[in-house]
Amino acid sequence: MLDFESAFNAFVTILVTIDPPGLAPLFLALTSGMNRSQRIHVGVRASVIGFAILAVFALAGTVILGAFGITLPAFRTAGGLLLFFIAFEMIFERRQERHEKSAARAITRDMIRNIAAFPLAIPLIAGPGAISATVLLSSAYPSPIGQFTTVVILALCLAVTALVLILAERVDRFLGETGRSILTRLLGVLLAALAVQFVADGIRALIAA
Image 1 (cartoon, rainbow, N blue to C red):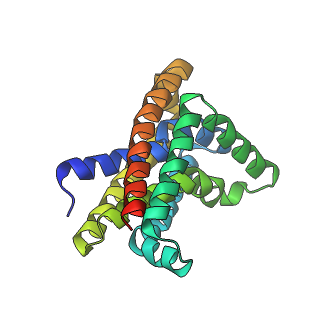
Image 2: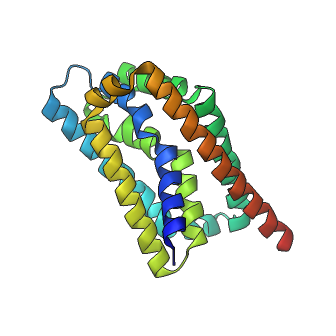
């Protein structure tokens, strides 16, 4: 069962990998021309889809890994390295540029009607980093109570994400370019530390095995 500190660390890890403040300007660009009610609908729908995807990996992530013959320590090490790469991109502001390219491709392919599913839900919200973090956290607490707590944490993270998308215009104006840059770097450093811990735990488990 997760104690408060573990639950809080899980919440921070998932929320940082989703990076709602970083999604705000992309969300505005993707929904340009839409009115407020349409933007709210797209933001909520994208968050619900993202939650559904992550919840599946939280509940069945180990089964999916087992089907491919992947051990949990190996996935924990690989997932930690992936999260560290994401943290590196956040610190040096490369992740935003990559997300902007994903958004641009969606617009040019005339995917506006399905924008909540792609690219908002996948890969901007439920991307490889968030999926990896979810599987790592659920595998660390495999009991029914632990998995239930992980799903609740996911729901809270996606509720925050939906709220940020709904208030995207205000969040973007409040933070500004400088504020977004500072916040992204701070979150990147925090995620890097958590990623190193994942890798260390994974290597320790591989050696023990």
